[in-house]
Length: 203
Image (cartoon, rainbow, N blue to C red; front, side, top):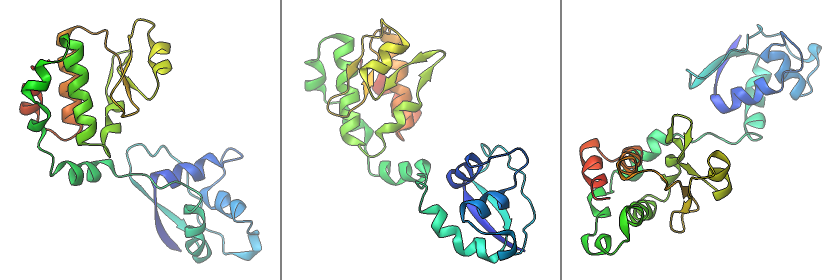
């Protein structure tokens, strides 16, 4: 027997190709690669389980499957290690720079200051700004890629586009909630909590 490790995205791809109950990973791979039973040594079946708590999965298979791994991986988009990426990108970001007193004072009300700070953050962290989509309330959607998506969640969302980032935000929350959301955005992008709360109070 030979062992390989596959990432979660590839594991889900293999699992999604299951055609019958009880079909093992080896059977799925053999079918996808158009390999007959006689062409390779049978591998020990693998029960497909939920992978949410794992980042890699050990799969028992034959040498033929090992050689075919690259072919299957090419058909699946590789997952992004956001945690590592965020650390690398935000290491050189000084989040205190997001506050420019003169420009901030020119914004109209809490909504204007909220939008200005979000726009500034999108410009500072363009490669990781998508992390804001992870911020959601209990039954509430705060960020989305389209205006329609926010309106479908709440007709009173009053969505506004965050500069030229391609992301939209709900603006019908009170000032205290806007501060909480902004603080969560800052932390999600790599800012420490103390500084995040301090910046959020500027709304």
